[in-house]
Amino acid sequence: MLAEIDVAIIGAGVVGLATAGEITQGKKEIFVFEKNRTFGLETSSRNSEVIHAGIYYPEDSLKAKLCVEGKSLLYKLCDKHNIAYKKLGKIIVAVNANEITQLEKIYQQGRKNGVEDLMLLSQTELKKLEPNVEARAGLLSPSSGILDSHTLLKYLYNQAREKGAQFVFNTEVIGIERAGAKYKVQIKDRDGISDVIAHVVVNCAGLNSDKIAQLAGIDIGKVGYKLHYCKGEYFSLSSKYRNIVSRLIYPTPEQAGHGIHVTMGLDGRVRLGPNARYVQTLDYAVDETQKEAFCNSVKRFLPCVEFEDLEPESAGIRPKLQGPGDSFRDFVIAHEEKIGFPGLINLIGIESPGLTASLAIARYVGGMVKEFLA
Ligand SMILES: Cc1cc2nc3c(=O)[nH]c(=O)nc-3n(C[C@H](O)[C@H](O)[C@H](O)COP(=O)(O)OP(=O)(O)OC[C@H]3O[C@@H](n4cnc5c(N)ncnc54)[C@H](O)[C@@H]3O)c2cc1C
Image 1 (cartoon, rainbow, N blue to C red):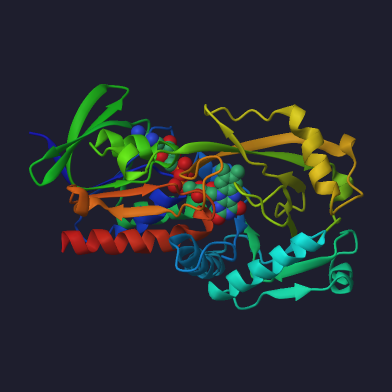
Image 2 (spheres, protein in one colour; image 1 turned 90 degrees about the horizontal axis):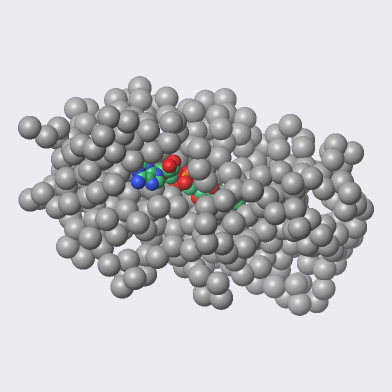
C-alpha cells in the first residue's frame, strides 16, 4: 500500500520551511521533500539579506501586502529568538532631475502600501546622514534592515521539525498525478523511484516551481506561469570601505531589479549588487567582465569607489514571471481549485521580497491549507 500523508511541501527554501512551521499542528502528517542534501541551499542563501520595507510594489499587490506584513513578523521573530539583524535604514538616491521625480513617485507608492515612516531628503539632509554619498536628493526608509538569513533558515527548520514536520532530503519530486481527490507524488531518491499519496501539495520549488506546476498537468504557457531566470551578481569592496556608509544605499530602481546597490553584512563587510541579467541556465559563477559596469554604476552616487577594490563575490538567480521588457508581475500564490486542481497550491515567481515576506507568505498559504483540510 502507498504511504499516505496530509500535506507534501516541495522545496525547503525559506518559504517551504516557514510554510511547514505554519501548517504543522496536531496529528497532520506534513512532509517536506527537498532535492538537495539540506535546506536553504538555493535562492534563500543567495540574496542580499535585506528586510525590505515594501515601498516599490503596486498597491494591493501580494508583493506589497506580504512584504509589509512579513517585515513586521520578521522583526518580531528575530527579537524573540535572537536572530541577528540591524535596522540600519536605507536611502534611495536621485542624481538628476528625472530621478528626483521618480523618487517622489516611489515615496507616494510606499505611503499607499502602508510604509508610513518614509522621508524625502534634500541634498543637505542626505549629506549630513551619508557624507560620502553624492546625490541631489534621497528617500529614507528607516524600517529597512539586514538580517542573518542563515540563522533564520536554521530556526525555521528546527521549529518546523519540533512541531512534527518531516524533512526528506536528497529527494526530488519528479511526478504529480491526480489520484481521486488526492495526488500521487512521485519521488526519486538514492534508492530509486517511489510514490506517496498526499491530500494537499504545496509547490514551494523556487526556480523549478513552474516545472512542478507543469508536472501536475497545468498548461503553464496558458496560465502565464513560465519562469525566466534573472541572475543577480555581487562584488565585494575591500575592507578599507568598511564605514563608507551607515545605511543601505540604493539608486532609483531599474526595470528588472532594484539597481546595483550598496549593502552591508552584519559583520560590516560592504558589497555591491545585485545586477539583473536574464540568463538561460542556472550557473552561479560571477562574470568578472561585469566589474566595470558595477563600478560605474555605483560611482554615480559613491564616487570614492575605485575599480581595483572590487572583487567578484557571489550570485543568485531570481525566479521571475516578468520576462525582459515585461511590466510588473506579482507573486503567484494560488490554490488551483478554480482550474481543476483542488488541493494543489502553487507558489511561483517568489523573487524579492520573498525573504522578507516569507512568514506572511506562510500565513497566507497556511490559511488556504487549513480551509481545504477543514
Ligand atoms: C540576487 C537576489 C537577491 C535577493 N535579495 C533579497 C533581499 O534582499 N530581500 C528579500 O526579501 N528577498 C530577496 N531575494 C528573494 C529571496 O531570496 C527569495 O524570494 C526567497 O529566497 C525564495 O525562497 P523560496 O523558498 O521560494 O525558494 P528557494 O530558496 O529557491 O527554495 C526552493 C527549494 O525547492 C527545491 N526544489 C526545487 N525543485 C524541487 C523538486 N523537484 N523536488 C524537491 N525539491 C525541489 C530547491 O532545491 C530549493 O531548495 C533575492 C533574490 C535574489 C536572486
